[in-house]
Each structure stands twice: as C-alpha cells, then as structure tokens.
Image (cartoon, rainbow, N blue to C red; front, top):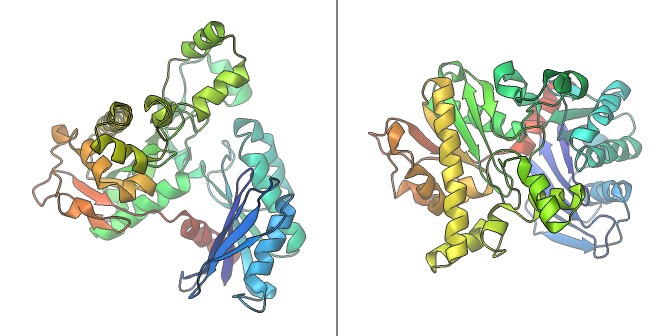
Length: 397
C-alpha cells in the first residue's frame, strides 16, 4: 500500500508518499507560503532532481490539488491517484481523548475541533488539511496521528500542574507534551540498535531543534516530558522561552504597556536562543559559528540552552531511577556535534563519557559514547513521517 503523509501548518504543507511494504520514500515535498504572495511547491520524486513550481496557492484545498498533481502528472509523477491506499495526517493536539492513532470519521473531526483552543496555531490547520484531502480523495481512508498520544501514559503526578484541581476538571489544563511521534519512533529505534527489549530499558530522548523537548521513556512508555499544555513549556528553543515564571507575563505587560497577545508573541516568537543572542539568530548553525568566533550573545544562548537540557536529563534520570541510554535527535540533536558535546560535558555525574571522533557524525545512527561510559549516548535520526505511515498502514491494511 502507498501511504500519503500530510503535515499541515498554518501557511505550509509538508508531504511524503511512502511505500508501506518497503518503507521507501517515493516522493516528498513542501507547499510554502499558502495564502501568501510568492507561494510555491517544492518536491523531489524518487530518483529525480528537486522540482520547484511557483504558483498561486490561496488555501490548503489548492495546496492539496497541487500535491496530487505533482504525484500523478505524466512527466514527473510517481503514482496514479487510485494507488494511494490511505492518508496519514499529523495532528498536533489530541487532548486526553486520543491515546493512539485513529481512523478519521466525523466524531474524530469533532473531537479535534473541541481541543483546538489548546493548539490554536496548529489544530485548525490540521483540520483544513484533513477536509481538503477528503474533498480531493473521497473514499480514501484517513488516519489521525497525534503528537500528544505517546505522552498519554504519563502518570497523574507528572502531568498535573500545581493549580486548583478544578481548572483541570473544567478545562483540561495539564501537561500534554508534544513531538510524541518523534519520541515514540526514536525510543523504539534505539532499543533495536541496542539489541534489547524496550520493556527492559530506561531511555531519555532529546528532540533538539528549533522546537525542542525531552522525554523519559521507561519500559517503552513515556513517564514524563518537558513540553506542557502547549509547546511553549520546557527547554529553551529557537524563539520560545521554555520554562518561565508566569509572573513575568504580568510584569512585562505593565512595564511595556502590552496586551496578553503581544506578550504571548514575545514568549513564542522573540525569545529562546534568538532573544538570548540579542537577535543574532534562532538557527543553531549561526549560533555555533558565532560561538566559535567569540560572539558573546551566541555563547550565552548556546550555553543556556545546553544547561536547560542537562537539567532535564538529570531530572528524568532521577524520575526513572537511572538511565540506560540518552538519544539525540532532530535538527540540532542529529547534526550538531558541537552542541551535543556541550550538553554531554555536563553529564559526568551519571558517568557519561563521549567518544569525540564518533561525535562528529551528522544525520546518521551512531553510538557516540566510549565503551567505558556508564550510559550509552546515541544519535538516532527521527523519522516522523515513517512513523505516521506505519500507524496509518496498521489501521488501514
């Protein structure tokens, strides 16, 4: 079966067509600037060069049309429409209702709509993608794969905030966690690489990129994760603050005469390593260059980011009563040996010992710890699209 994987953002749409039998990527691409001037689709069919088509894309319905055209056109197409057996959709927030992937029906759509206020920037766009695909491919089964589902195994004492319990009862205010598809995939793959049953392992997964999160995976189940009600909590990120005293919001509002929306914009889009570096960049490649060239803002941003990662690793080691392996994944985790080293240099307390030569690896599976290290250090590239395709195939085969 050929599975189309769709990941809709507010103004973008990522896609991959995957053969579920061989798990080969047949085509992948991106629709950019949907509803904005300068929109285009960029895609790479298997065995061919990248193709870019600049074309008006007023909405996600048009974007889906262009994706189907790219996949099926006579010149560069890779499939006929009737060969697409199912569509897997990444959904950011599933609330407490969804603990696993599900086939999409009217009830599921309603449930996703009901928790959209918990992810106002993401869930509405995800729903638009679902409805656009249903319109373009009537009768083709669709599956929702939730970012939050993997973290639904967290115990109550891990997901509750210290708020009055009535706010949880009335509004579902609690920690949900995100990047769940990545954390699930990486933890399972790590167990395979180690040749051990995941039920016997205590793993910490560090998904480090512009968005970043850490999870504690004990016996194959997530027992804690750094992101919360929204993706703002936890690690310092590209432009997000991560953990912060809530009183800072009121303080800045009063000092700067700002609205809640304006402060929220600062917390989400003008903070993180971008803000700490005095707006040098939110891209860790730029920050690494700046760090090595003596830029104080870059050094401050990277060191503060790394310190926060070390704190979470320490906390989750304590929460699990030890750790067998620490996995680095996502854009920074997979590709920046520089940042990994700064983090690992802070992990001597758990006996972590870095193999400097192995740590030069970029984007490939590798054990980067020395043989005498008391905890295995690993680079495990994530593959969220493949994880979505696997869940979709399992439900639709």
